[in-house]
Image 1 (cartoon, rainbow, N blue to C red):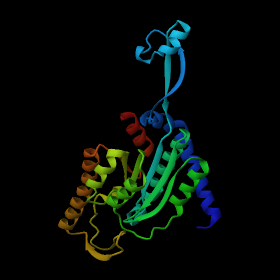
Image 2: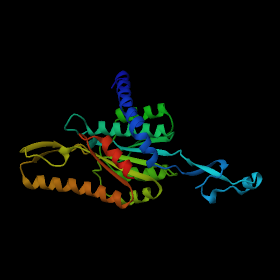
Image 3: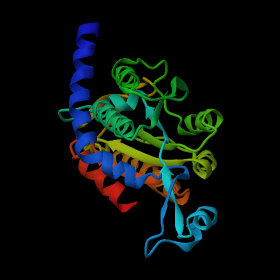
Image 4: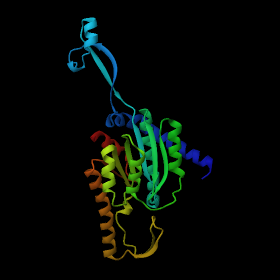
Length: 287
C-alpha cells in the first residue's frame, strides 16, 4: 500500500470512528471506567446533605462556619488495545473482513479514551508479540496506532492469547483498561488471564464471521488453514466432518466465554455483519 492510499484509509477510519466516539461512546466510556481515585479540589461552605466526614475542621474554626472539602475523580487512565493480527483475522465472507471491523473497533475505543484525556497503548500479537507501542496521549499517537492496524504485516499467522497476556503483565505495571480484540480461536490461556485480571480491567471483544460457525456441504473442497498455511482436501459432504468442525468451533467459543467470565473480565461478541456500536453501547451500559 502506497503512502497516499494509506493516509486516505487512515483519514476515512478517523472520520467514521471519531464521530462515533464523540457522539456515542465518550460519555458511556467515561461512566463505565472510573479513575484511580479521588483527589482534593477545594473547600466550600457546608450545604444540607453534605457528608459530615468531609468537614474541614481547621477552616470551620477559622471562619466560625462549617466548611467541607470537595474531591474530584482523578480521571486519567491508561487504555491498552491488544489486537490479534494472526491469519484467521483475514477471513471474511461478506462485504468486510474481520480485520476491518477489528480496526474500526480499536480506533473507536482509542478516540473515546482520547476524549477523556487518557493514554492509549497498542499490542499487536499472533503467537508472538508483533508490535508494542507504549501508552501515550494525543491525536497523532492515535493516528499512528490506526496506521499500524491497517498496514502492519505479521511475521507469524498463528495465535497465542496466553503469550499476549504474559507480555501485558510484564510491561503494564499499573492498572489499565484492556480491550483484547480477537476471534479467540486459541486455548490454554485461563491461568494467564486470571493473573492479568487481578491487576487490570479486561474486556474480551470476540469478532467473528457467520461462515466460520459451520462448514457447508460442498463435496470435496481444497482448504487452506489461515494460521498454519496447511493445504488439505476436505470432504465437506461427510456429516461427521461437519459435526467435528462445529464441535471444535463451539468448544473454543465456550472456552472464551467461560474463562473470561470466571476471571471477572468483560465479554462482547460481535459478528462482522452486525452493528458493533450497539453491542459496545449495550456492554458499557450494563457495567
